Length: 250
Image (cartoon, rainbow, N blue to C red; front, side):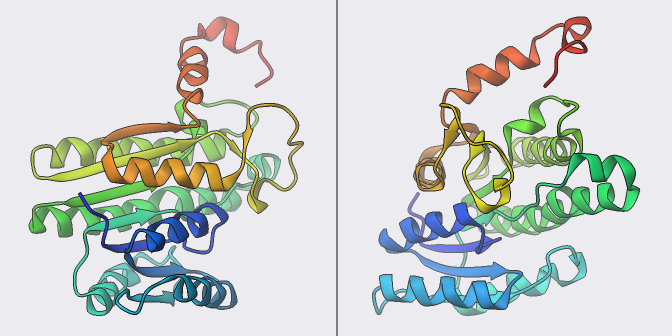
């Protein structure tokens, strides 16, 4: 299915910006939602330079943790684009695990951003595209959601919530012409991971992850690990026996 009229949440994230450039280069019209007015303005100006006169490049600023405002965002996107065939949920945070262990508020904030706010948006997207009888729903999750680990289990739990919800939507919409794609990147060199030591072969550049996301948006249905080798890494991690797993520093 051609990706022509696309609504993107979290449009100012590093990965989403590269995805948007690729989509616009393929002729898509886009409606972008971001939290920072300054960053969103920069993204929109960049995309308008890359777009043809026939393409629509538009967007709005919003705090996505306020679920009551989500329906209005879809209404604005529909009014701007005229229709929607694709919804990409790309917003999220990488919380400090130690801070979350010391603060219930920090933990719940992370779950609200990565989990419940995404669930609200995805519910609206699922209802809209089910009624339309076709389209693509995509959410950027993480390999961290595949198994809880001491180093980042709050982040992992929030992404696990997202993963399970996407599985349910996929099952619900099976046979209705709507593809539901969960993107599970591994380690990506973005501002969100600025504090990490990024040595070693497991780290990827956001532009490469974005290319994989667009390919998945065009043809996939299900979980997509990026890069591909993370499927095998997480398969091994998921199958480590619990007694052994508890001794590992992961």
